[in-house]
Length: 271
Image (cartoon, rainbow, N blue to C red):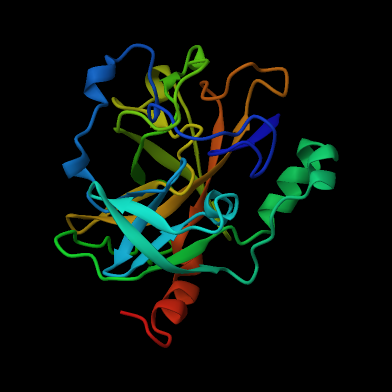
């Protein structure tokens, strides 16, 4: 099986890369049903080149570490269409970027490395955001079996043929749904299914979506349960496109990192 980062060219491995048309969809459902207005996800943050983050406090954005590491120094992000100055970037102390030597070692070594890496970062904004409600963290550890809603502007395509070749990595916003099959340690896991196993709007995040939101509904409110991270290709390394049925996505598990997030946001100068 082949591993790729859900965003740019090398966060984890070769084929990863920036922005596109957002979310891989079912081949038998019209694309129009997956389209979403920006107003549906106002807390979704656009990073400058590609990738996303999520507003979780008036002055705080959470994202995948690898999504911002390649864009450092990061000066601004975009929230609700407006540029917002970034004052500082706080990587989790357990974050480690993938090295060239590790990439050469092959997909098995890469997966083992990723499994033990705390790939998450917080961005503190220079000024609090007004008019956009931050998302609440999903803190329960009962994610397995629950339906998640995902959204992003990364690469698109369908589960039968995979991501469309040349699909832009910052494009139209789409949303979709999936079901968590496993929740362990740092990761939430789900698979791109088809047929009777698929949800009506089954989907998966694509290249360019790293750091994007994974939501679980709790007591009538969609809360932030995960962040887009990496995918295990079912078709193996010879596959010319990811985003196919059978691919398994591993997303950063917010409940695992909630204490660290609280500690940083509650530190000196936080608001």
